[in-house]
Length: 135
Image (cartoon, rainbow, N blue to C red):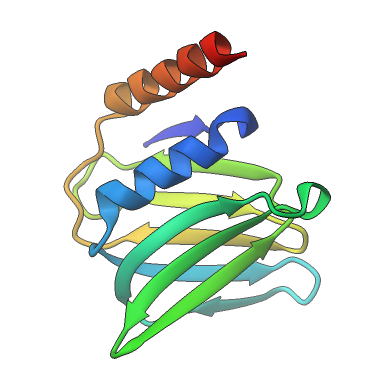
């Protein structure tokens, strides 16, 4: 299994691209509360979007919105500190792990084709180059 630590400076673009590429795919959100040691898993639902909300610079949030039945449900991950993409050797077992203020949340991609780690690294490199040129 490959793990790619996504640098914080590219979270916004990475999460937007990730959400666009996987929109409509079945996912399951599993959240582990580090204070209570409880783990809660959502129903399997379709990914609508995943985005970094930078409205409050000191209290950023990652919002994972899913479509379940006729509802849009948003998981808000307050003050994220780590985003890691796990790429499995097998189809259907890739995931995105996000550590936030009191929780570790895993977005499991169900039935997905294997993600190409080289493609992710190329995307991150392109984002870095674009950001450096804009500065």
